[in-house]
Image 1 (tube, rainbow, N blue to C red):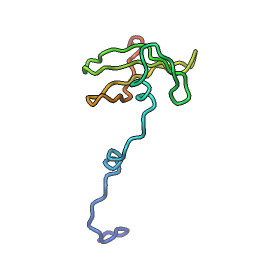
Image 2 (image 1 turned 90 degrees about the horizontal axis):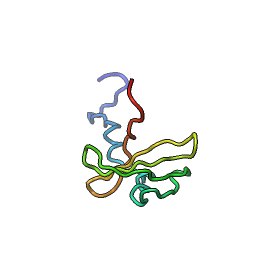
Image 3 (image 1 turned 45 degrees about the horizontal axis):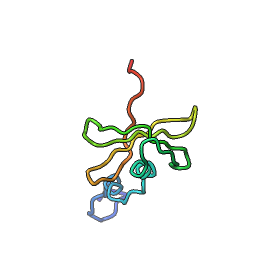
Image 4 (image 1 turned 180 degrees about the vertical axis):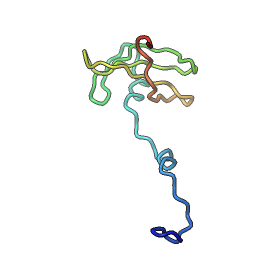
Length: 99
């Protein structure tokens, strides 16, 4: 037996595997994307949010681009529809060109 180890032969549980089985908290951006229409303004996490466009991603999923914040603090976020009809936050599109 190695020092510092108990006599238990149970393998260590993988924390990452345990996290994936936990229920997910509601995603405020996804909820807004599912209920808002193009151009509609609302609030996500206390920030101003506005749906600026809807498009089909290369994966075939319907996605919505949402601007969060106001003025100089404005940033883009994306939510896409899953097969079950719910929306989930996704990576935003790249802006500008790559150098």
